[in-house]
Length: 147
Image 1: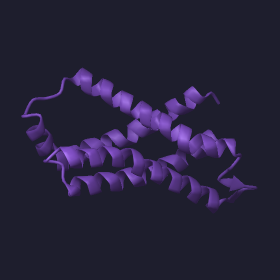
Image 2: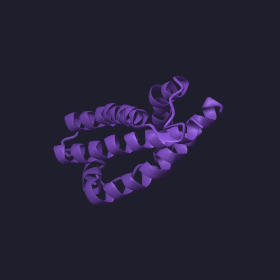
Image 3: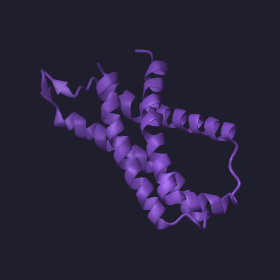
């Protein structure tokens, strides 16, 4: 399968799952903080949408290049002779989790260091979601893209 198609597949899953969760977290935990930071001014919708699309394209491309593709190229599979391969599963899961920690961790720690309203609680909540999500997403994407 064409790598661009594979990245677009990851992009659709990434954004399709992460955006609703992010929206829920924003309403529950971050909205007051964002209002204070933005001084109750809203970001133009076009800017927000374009930025979100670019972020998810970057994240999907990175997940493909650093986690999914190396596993596919190495010939690994989740099922060997019809039997589930736990070593492949955990290898991909852990690499995906580490990718989530690196990518979201960079953003969260920059926010923690530079935004007085962004606290340790927000960092922990976001990193917990990111690490779990990226690990599980890696396994799902590998399963479908390695077939």
